[in-house]
Image 1 (spheres, protein in one colour):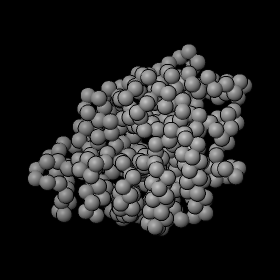
Image 2 (tube, rainbow, N blue to C red; image 1 turned 90 degrees about the vertical axis):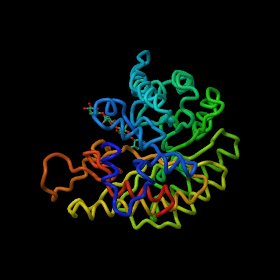
Image 3 (tube, helix red, strand yellow; image 1 turned 135 degrees about the horizontal axis):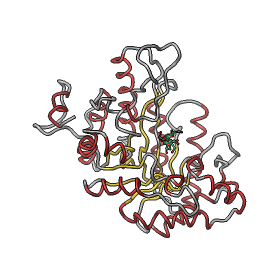
Image 4 (cartoon, helix red, strand yellow; image 1 turned 45 degrees about the horizontal axis):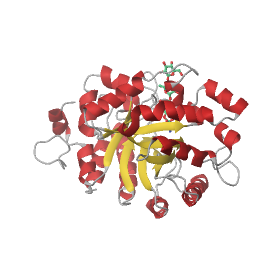
Length: 358
Ligand code: G3I
């Protein structure tokens, strides 16, 4: 959609100034923050109009898939950097920052490395991975999810997820990974990134508690932890969202001296049978409520949505059996742009929240 078409689509209660097309990045920047999306360079390059929207709306990009270990090194001696490099090049060409996602995540660890870690418990496997990736991008990537999803409410007392890294190196693997990353990146913001902190239920209460203790311990031990990524995969079946819970959690994190990025914001719908406008309003209201709390916390440096358009969302096969109609999987409507690249109520809700006018 062109800037002009986007202006035409603005609601009567319009937000932008003058005749400039609205931009989430511009609103974020005005408040000293960033707005970004998880993106794939193959989609940006192949879909007409997408690159223009990305350039206009974002001042930060993160790889949805292509920077992960199983993509960049599918075999011990087989490297595949082309798509990762492509997104970094696109970002550089248009003056966008890049968030690095992610260095250590069991789910995206290639089979050969999983096997080697189980057999040999040798840290050099991890160190070699960091050495292959981090100097390649250097300061082009200023913020990294060094360890992804280390929290597990079902794990032992310490709440560290029992991954292949935990089994090989113990709970100290998180601090060790941060130190390993720091050797290559003296200035980057090094983060741990996790989900399930958003709602008022016992599992998420325990997850918040574990994360706070993990951060406190890492900081006390002097690990180079600069920030926490709060994924924020919101879910309309889990509500109602209670602002005080998120507010207290973010403020407790900030009190431990770390910065915060909302790293993977989107909304999983619940009632697909409702009329579209009601579905869209529910999604927008959830994000409004969430961002009003998140953006009131000064330690929150930026917001990333896990994609831009519903067409590309990882949340696609959400169709309950009783919903009939068009063929194919039901599109979840949890991202700011719809499948035809038109902005939805969620987009305007994000606009208002970022502009501080919600
Ligand atoms: O493109 C291939 C397709 O050709 C093939 O037929 C199909 C068969 O499985 O796979 C397709 O690739 C999949 C890809 O998504 C594109 O759809 C991969 O298998 C699948 O693993 C990949 O999933 C990604 C996942 O991370 C694992 O990397 C999701 O797109 C991505 O959204 C998701 O992102 C994660 C964050 O990194 C961490 N937090 C949760 C978030 C959502 O799961």
